[in-house]
Length: 252
Image (cartoon, rainbow, N blue to C red; front, side, top):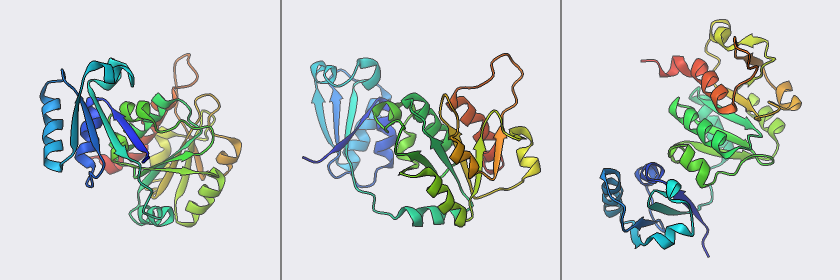
């Protein structure tokens, strides 16, 4: 049986349907009681792109997800093998002076979804995940990302250290983040202007970047804090760092 990715929630489903070009095998399951403008938009896209729509009763959704998550819509998308070569993709990003985000063992799916959403919103070109000790890109991640997973490349790597060595050869600057960083993020752009292409590393929720990951960084930046709390949630920290590094790209 063909494996399919499950997309739940009205906004994520709408984002996926809007972005998918080849809708072969895509199937929408819609609650018989679902209504509203966004439901109408979803139905119109399905009609235009010839996506199969199956009307379901509440028992169908009860077996899959709570009502607060699915919102009366579930999209099944065939999982396709990647047709591009990862090296070629990264070389193209390097040529375009783009930015990628590497998540060093982010295990919370809500943090992962939030960071993917932020990375896509600021124009990052890809999110890199470590194969081990990382959250899977599941329906929780997709919904938390507000559909951003449909618009940004997500790459899983087996060996983070080797990956960093490889992209350094492509011209990427490696910028880590840590509360022990030697450069304040506020000063980073003034001191090291236009460090593109770049790979921004966000460490795990509890321990931050691993030692070996940090050793591959060209710079390690910190976020200055004035309150009694000594650290930030991983997704919040990622938002601050990405804004500061990407603001020159998104201004105007």
